[in-house]
Length: 175
Image (tube, rainbow, N blue to C red):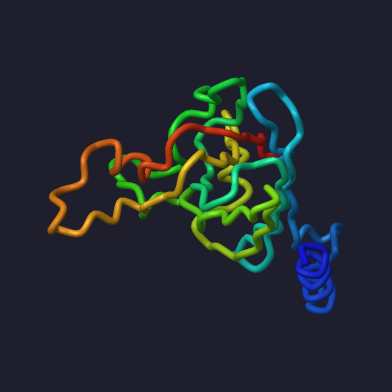
C-alpha cells in the first residue's frame, strides 16, 4: 500500500511537471526510524510539492495500538529515551494539538506493523532542516491532542505539551 501511495505521489508530481530536480520544484527528505538500541524499525519519506508535504512511512516491531507521531524540534536521536530530539516542533507558546509538528496518530496492527500516508501544510522541509534539524518520533502511547473535555477538568501541562503520548519508542532524523 505504501508503495502505491508513494508511486501515486511521484506520478502526480511528474505529470504536473514538478518531478524536475533541475528546477527544484519537488523536494524530498527521509528519516530512518530506530529504537532505543539503534535497531531499524522503519522509514518515512517526506515529499514537498506546491506548498504541501506528503508524509508516507512504514514501521515494524512496534507494540500494537495507537501511537503518538510527531515532528520534534531537534535532529538528534540518541537512545534509549531520545530526549535529545527536544520537544515538539512548534511556535513559542503553542499548545499541543496546534503544534506544527503534531501529526495524525499511527495505528499499529496486531503483528507490529503500520503504514501511514497523509498530507500537511504545517511546515516546509526548509523549516525541518534548520540549524539544529528535526526528528520524527513514535511514542509509546496514544495521543489525546490535548483534548480534555471540560467534565474531566482542565488539561495539565503534560497534556498541553505532549498530548500524553508517553515515552519515545522510535526516532529518525530528518535528512
